Image 1 (cartoon, rainbow, N blue to C red):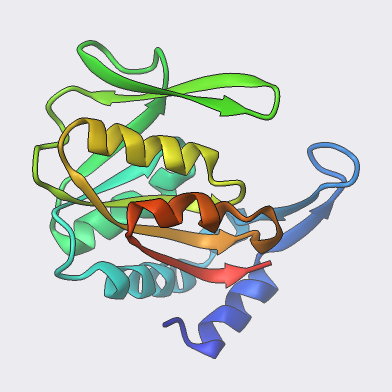
Image 2 (image 1 turned 90 degrees about the vertical axis):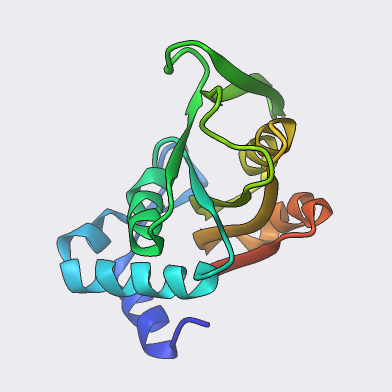
Length: 178
């Protein structure tokens, strides 16, 4: 869906930081996108095209999912719902635990913010292993809503996160893949 021009501009804007946060990792720093308001606007326009007329709310995953997710929701004129790490939202909350490579984590949303029957877009900046996004989808379903779309700025194909999300029968979109 994204034009080759947009993809090229993003590829030349996103910085590769070797050995961060640990040796052997090639970190993709998206922060330079925010130094170029026009590029940011074009990214939002592209992500909005994917979801226009298909969703009732946008859920963004803490914290980088908020960077684009809020703007997507505003452009779509639908609510934006925070999905946060456990303990960051006031009660009452609905939570979902999930496994990490070493240990486990938990995410939450405020009870009542996701409505039964809503069509939900879950947005995050990056699709890697898919564990957090999968947990977010379970959190949405637990509240009687349906995940109809996932969107990301980038995806790391070798980590196979998309495979974890296929069981939700939702559209999956990302602008760039590495």
